[in-house]
Image (tube, rainbow, N blue to C red; front, side, top):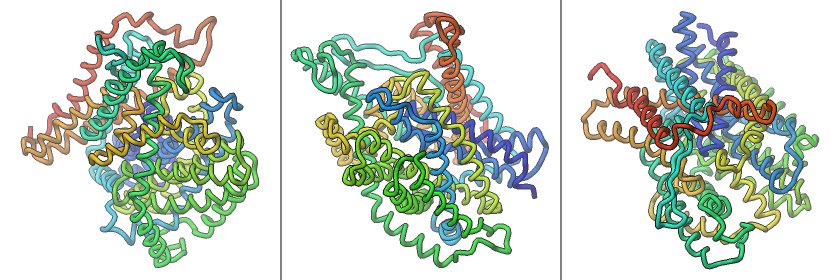
Length: 625
């Protein structure tokens, strides 16, 4: 059966770049990324089976393997690298070097793949039945149900097309505002708003009602409690309070969010990330011990007479790892020095092992990547400062160590899911591992240009692209290196995090909601409510399990399309915003004018968008109804 073919490689590379770029845009905007495995597999089936009339589950699996590598690398990069751009804007540091960005992304991705090669037998094969790998198993089921691939692919493409058209009408032609808000009269500083955009609606449906509600509750605390409280007290304080440079009475709710609430939210996010790591420590220690014993039991040889048990050569993987670590230590392209290279070698393998096994237990969405990255940054910053590698160079070095570790962790978690899918459908591990390397290289060569483009168009840390994780990583490094953070605000966020944790609420989605503008959490909640209606009907037996799952899966595929469609148009609009024609950009030239339909036109369009999601989920016809 064909597997590692030119068709699967080309489509996989396209998926890697497309979903990598789309996830970069969405992740920087809302702090969440989507798994590309199932959408890439479904699109692949639509093309290979539906259009090319070829029948190979292994080709489709190769496409999702290559495609999901790009999404994972992008997720690791956007959690850290935008901090370099923020520093260049706020602290006057040099503009980030493109070669530096691409090299750090590439090294992290390659190390993630090579670290995972010796772990496959120990985790995917020997632990089969013990580690469920939920996303990998779900993707295998989608591939096995390949005869419906044409219908499912149509659902993804419909979402992609509608998301793209909607985004272009809103933010390209500017027919109506994509961000609407209302101040609350008589309640100084309070406001409610919504970004009426397809990706946020799709994210809400995918994450479900509970996570959406946690995010919205964080946003409500920020925008309806903390900002009004600061605004009220600020009326009576004529002086500016650091970090703002003007008096509180002169700041509106956006000014208070930018100067104060973001630091509070960052404290809560950092606390949540570190707490998730601490709570996982017993599991991490046991995981690492079991993985190492499993690795020893499975042997070090990569060669096998059985096709479905053949890995890449362990010797080649080891040589490549050593070469990459020496390269990091010796080259100024990744300026982390010998100490940074040693940290990457130690933390890289540790967290790759932990990530690969943890996602097998709890799924990728619960993998504490941000916690592991924060821990790395703290250790790197403390060590660098202790050895005199501080200042701008030390900050950049610490961030790049964190970048490489973050990408290693993300890639190892994703690759373990892909290898599980391959194990269940009878793929060749060696070919999948080569496919992962191809996806990593393709995405790494593009991600730097995507980041530069988005920064030029809107700027990281802005309302358009808050870049929550990267902003928080920046604060961690600055806090250790310079000690000039508004620590009171950070500790307020930590205190809120403690309260939320004691109440038994998931801290990270709550903290992200507190950090981000409320405009992002409200449309996510709408999508979560639609998913919640289906979940409720399933739980109360108003729908059979089969019918409910069919509607939910269709909604997830359509939502994935919405997210990808908006992400791609977001990249296109960034290109149009950067290209100058005469006195304005191309984006200014294509706009109709001053958002002629206004707020209420935006609400009408968003209701129509909601109805399309309902059509592909709640209202979808199944065999039973």
